[in-house]
Length: 499
Image (cartoon, rainbow, N blue to C red; front, side, top):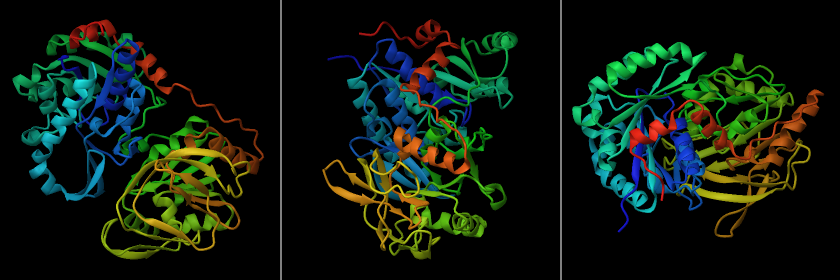
């Protein structure tokens, strides 16, 4: 019987220190070195989700890590996914399937019941691959959560993983981050930490040489790399904190409404990568007069629609649409554009009915199980977006509810994995407003270029969208290799020649 895979675990001193990016880089680098690699994150809390080819829902970051490792994403790579629906409740997704809503108190007191699911998923991957790159969650030094840990040191011990501890120097206090975290770990947990990585360094790394020596001396651990700050690495973020970063300007202005429960916001990353200026707005004054408004996905559509109105953004979006500004709604955003949204059984939250923005003649009813399927298809009506009609597309559906058109032209015809053909979305009579359930739409080159080209012509601009790299994770691997002593990392983690 073949030995179980070795495990390398990326833990952090806090949330948003770069664990997902570094785990993605490790997946690609180890794959390039010849290992058969798979990613793993026991429990993820994120509204940025992906649908696997088998129709399972997992964290978008783990899907990206699987792509970087050259393997097919699957539910075992992220067995537990929590999708916040409010401050005290989340949808619980177990092995890719929604299990309903759990309240925070219940989950924190009962989540040990999920450990057998996590342990089995980890064993499944270890039996098939040679190296598992495990991503932790938050910080392992949350001592109040130690007894119910499902994502950090409990996983590291179960996997006998070599832990790499990542700190974020940009937020300041990097010595306190590292040394404080290590001091709060139990001795048996502290023994699993094999090396340190300092992330998000700006400027000349030689100037931090004395800091490296101090960290090494005080921690007794090797500093395996000081990674430069990069905002443009093509790794999808796990939470909306990443949207707080200043937007990069571009000749085209794309304003994305940022509701409290915005989901699948990496749908817009392809537009930014192509050179458009993509910014996220939370108040009417910030909306301005953009070239395109996007209403993205939402985890709690009715609640976010109520927020949209209360914030004043809803009326402003309607006014821009009336003035002729193009508008695209994706998934929950598409539902908000309609005339009515009804949730008689409380599938989306509390039972109720709401009036939509009234910009598309459609009606949505929330009922039935969540639809999580990859799709292919073709645009049937691109409306005012020249060249979009008859364009092939690919993406995935991830929603509850069905939407009926009241005379509007459908946006696309989709083919689901079982061969079922369905019409999707809607287009306004003047063609300037599009709604669709397809996530990943902007990742399709011709779709993206047709939309951006139309917007540029409306402005009288000469704009050539940048091509997206055919191998985005190659750049992530180069960034990592350029800053990390890979040979020292392999020694520290005990990885030997693959095969």
